[in-house]
Length: 477
Figure 1 (cartoon, rainbow, N blue to C red):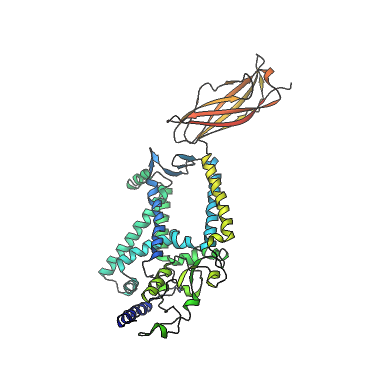
Figure 2: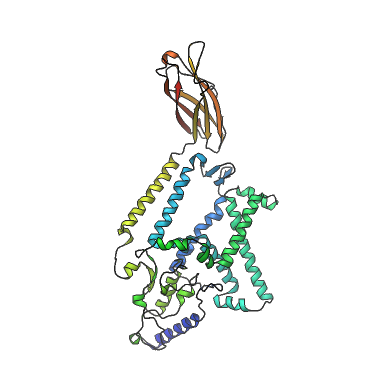
C-alpha cells in the first residue's frame, strides 16, 4: 500500500469513527434519526415504495363516465374496470384474502420481513416523513442539534414548514383512501364546497391523525409495540430463511483499525466497529447481535457495510441476505431447490387459479328462478297445466340491459308474461312473474326439470346468457 493510499484509508477511518460517536441505539427513550445512504438496497426500497403511487392515482383513472376502480359499499358493488362484483360473488374476496395471507407467510418463511422493510405503509410513510425532515433540518447530527436548540424564528420556521408538509401528506393519504369508495371527482367537489358527508369526513380525519402520528412521531415504536407481525414472525422463520445477516465468522473479533496499520498486521476480523450499520437502521438495532424483534429487514445495513468495506478495500458482503444454515455451512442449496418453496408455490398457484377462474366465469347477468308453491300447479280450462314462477334477473353490468326470458324442457311449452324483455337495471335485481303452460299429455312425470334461459346484449352487441334449472310440477298421472 502506497503512502497516498494509506493516508486515504486513515482519512476514511477518521470520518467513520467520528460519525460513530453520534450513533444511537434504540432504547425507546428518544427519536431515532437514521442516517440516509445510497446503495443497491436503498434503490430497491424506492422502487418498492413507488408501488404506493397507485394508491394515490388509482381513484382518478376513468372508464367511460365512471371511475375505473370504485368500491361502492352503499350500493354493494365493486367496479373493477369492466367487471362489477356484487355480494353474490364475494366468495372470490375470500380466495383473495387467503392468497394474500399465504403469500405473506411464504415470503416471511423464505426471506423474512421484507414486507415490513420494503412495502409496509408504516415503513413507506415514515421514510417519506423522515426524507422531508432531512431536507429541511439536515443530517442526523444537525437534527439532534436543532432539537436541543432554543426556540427562535429559524427553528420555528423550519418546524412549522415540516409539520405543514407532514399534514399535507396525511391529508392526501386520507382523501386518497376515501376516493376508492366515493367517486373522486365528487369527493373533491364536496371538499371544496364544504358538503362532505360525516362518514367521509370522519374517515379522512382519522387517516390524517393516524398518518401524522404514526409516521411523524411513533415511527419505529409502531413496529415495536403496535404491529403484531413483529411477534408472530418468530414462528414463521427458521435457520433456512434468508435474512440480513452479519457474517460473524468473517467479522469477529471486531475491532477498530489503528491509523497507519497495515492489513498484514491486523489481528481482528473485517468488522471495524464503525457502527454504520446501526446508524442507517430506521429502528436503531445492531444487526451484529443477531436477529432481533426490531429488525424490519430493509437491508439498509447491507448498503452501509458495503460502502465501508469498499473504502477499506475489503470484500463486500460482511452483512448480506443469507440464512443461518448457509452461514454455518450446514446447507448450500438455492431457494428453488428447497421442497417447501415448491409446496408454498403450489398452494399459491391453486389460490390464484381459483381467483382467475372466478373472474373468467363471472357472468354479466345471472338469473334465479323461484317456483310458486301455492298452488303448485293450476289446470286450465283447455286441460293444460300451468306453473307460476318468479324470475329474478341480476344485472352485473354498468348499464341497463334488456333481457329476454325463455324456457325449454317440455314439448309445446308456452311462456306467458315473458313476451316483452325484462328491463334489468344496472347493478340491481329485477323480478318478473311468468307462467309456464304445458299440454297435460306432454307431462311425463309429477316433477319434470325445465331450464330457464336469460339472454341480453350490451351496447356493443355482445351477447350474455345465463341459465337456471327449475322444475315443472303436474298432477299424478
